[in-house]
View 1 (spheres, rainbow, N blue to C red):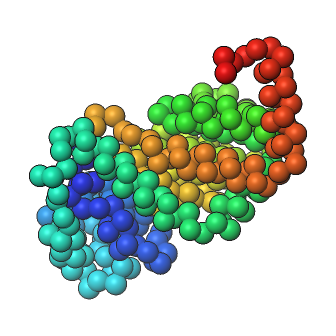
View 2 (cartoon, rainbow, N blue to C red):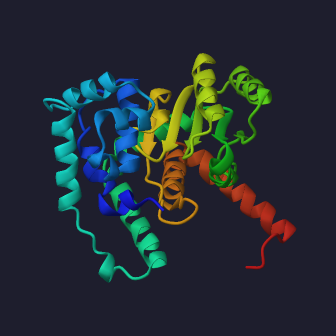
Length: 283
């Protein structure tokens, strides 16, 4: 269970990085703060560096980049966030109820992010224009990729799910690009398979525009995506909850439908006629 996700709301920590252009190394440190707050508020710069897998001077430079005199000042700020965060556990019910209510919070934050409709609409147009449309999801992200692709295939003429790693993954990416693909939709979720990040690099090398649905603006996918769409992952149970990423996937599919309304209507009507003829459903 990720206690920090409850004690310090993720958005409070993310606000520290808002509007700051971070280097890839600094993003790793930022991601460490998000994942391990408030524990890092009581760690030394050397301990944070070890936790994030970077050098101690990198942690100091990171603190300065955020406008602090040094790491001690940043640590004091993190402690303030910890002290000021409402706990609310006494009234939140048992741990299962708390986990579900945390997901409600994740969905509420996602709703706030969707205020910029133009950005989602533009991303929908980008994906709708890609023929074929490869959809990447490895390990824990594979079910989300399959769920999205199942419905996307009803309105898009050529959706290709990439849910297996290994050397064949690069082959399939290159084949999609050769067939005319212009974009890749990738689901990049903790624990961030190395193969997924390698695939994002290879997709860009193949000329594809990478759209990534991931759990945080400072996730490792940020270094490899042209369009980053964050949706928080619940971490209060033994295994992660992907409620918000799945909701975001369906919102993005709506944007794809909106980008090609005539084709969407034609393909949906054709499917309904086929389903009725074959008596696929009981209703």
